[in-house]
Amino acid sequence: MLHPHIELQRFGAVELLRIRREDALGALGDGMIEAITDYAIGVAGRSEIRALVLTGTGRSFVAGADIKIYHGAGLGDFNAYQRRSRRMFDAIAGLPQATIAAVNGYALGGGFELALSCDLILISDKAKLGLPEIKLGLLPGGGGTQRLPRLVGAMRAKELIFSGRMISAAEAVAYGAALEACAPDDLLGRALTLANELAEKAPLALAEAKRVIDDGLEAALPSALTFEQRVLGALYATDDAKEGIAAFVEKRLPNFSAR
Image 1 (tube, rainbow, N blue to C red):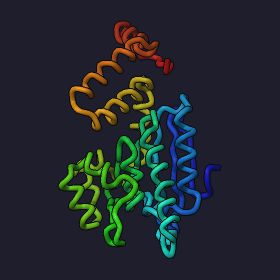
Image 2: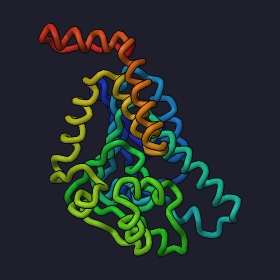
Image 3: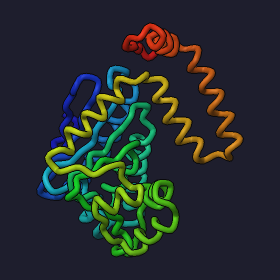
Image 4: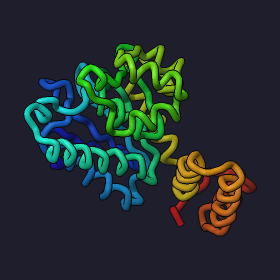
């Protein structure tokens, strides 16, 4: 068991990580951040897992940090907590596998930032997203000021962070902060279906596409285009590329081996 409030389920090449802490709306309490970080570091090297779904339980996905941890804490302890949180978000964002956040309910503060660390966000049409740190005299410290603008643009991110307001599923999709909204009863099934579809794709190509997109956003366009060409050439030399091309020509399904 990773942690009493974290449940893992396996569905073929897809793994489901569920936060179970309904009494605290999924707030990331004692040991949960470290457990998720350790899990992400471990699953990165498991080639049999090709996609990951993260979700919550009940009314909440993750309602952010457990604010009781902040109350009365010294600056050193506060900064140490932020460093641990950053390590978790970066470990999820850096996974070679496709990651899907199935946001079933409230995703606030660090919960929204956890979703933003995933490749794709599916959201229940009853869910709410927000970065309310401004109301505590703080700002988002788990990537909210950086990952959110990359999805929705600087102006919309500023409006959401300055106001600290919650947004609906419909707004999240309209702003580009979520891929699609689903009925609550359909959300997990839709996320697992999508994860299974992605798990069937060439894993090396998917991991490299993810890396080229993420790293390319930080580079000048000419450099990013050169990077794209270099990675494409390396993929062409893999067994998976040979198999994918042969399967296309022979009109059959490919059998990718991650080599």
